[in-house]
Image (cartoon, rainbow, N blue to C red; front, side, top):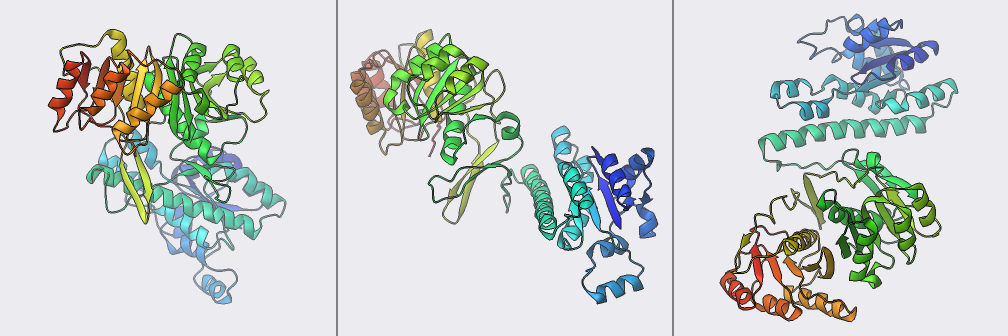
Length: 510
């Protein structure tokens, strides 16, 4: 039996090769892998002894050879293949262990195009695909974490066709993801990221209980390692809908740096938000905005949940609490609730992956775009359009309202007072309707919105939104501007003695 080992990631390869030798395998190897094995005292055959041809062109060609691919690809169940292999002196290769040149690490560390090109693997993917195609007879190993399983199955004679098929699927997924990464990089470098093909590749993290509804299947996939590194399941099983709400809540709660922000989300929309001196105070104020919707909601906490906050949270039913972390006492307290789900990042503050792109499924395909984000100086540099300037607190409230609006379904308006959201209207076909819906709910809950800051994620097309804001007692407004009736809106704000700022940037979320 023969095994071909050629790996860029050499962790664990010595032990893997040693165990294969003990099982009776003859090892064939290349370049750096061969050197490492020999230095470890493991007997190996260098690749050019098999190919009868030296590695050439600075290592660009070394395994692209019929003695290699013939040894991998010839069918063991066809006598004609066996006869031809014998005739051509092609010896069977029964196991291929290959992982590819570190293209991802290269593009993250350099912009040198020549170096990047040289870190595109050619022979590696060819060997992986050859072995995967002939999985009936050949084991293909592309992941370090599979070494022990492969060895155990070889030792225990459980190297089944099902196992080899699983490795085959993993191998083709591996080369597909690798080629997709190269294509996406080249399109980003030369076609502004929008080439003729767009590849979206994710690695499975876990199955969700089901999809949006019980009759749908669902699973979470990650682009890089964000969820593997920073999504710790402490209690419960995350559903498909939970993941969406957690993402939305975390984006808002983490949008204010290290501040003690708490965001409550229900069905993808914020129903509570506040920043106060402590996380407990923030939660209490966030809850006041809409305690009815908060029931069964998802809470994101930009910090570590301690016992006092946990006790307060347990006063109502919350489906999910997602936090930077929990103290042991807080975790014990929250775990008293049978149906609550608890997840953390294991950090001091919430951290986002900050994906550079996003996309949306449409019938027959998807639309793809650069990610949207409120820039750090966007509110600070917003231009005053009226005679009255906002106070320091009003500017803080404007920033909070503006960032929340950018992460809330359009059309939306957000009212913030003393660093807490007091009303929100979202997902409406009319911006005036969004304002009215927000104020109606605030009135029903007995919330005083007078003196609040109002943010809209898009311009006001008419002065009627300012008229409605005046009736509510709003003191300052921030919006992008850009309407043909901006002058009317500005005149209305001046008429009512409001502060009005234009940011110059629209943040629709559809």
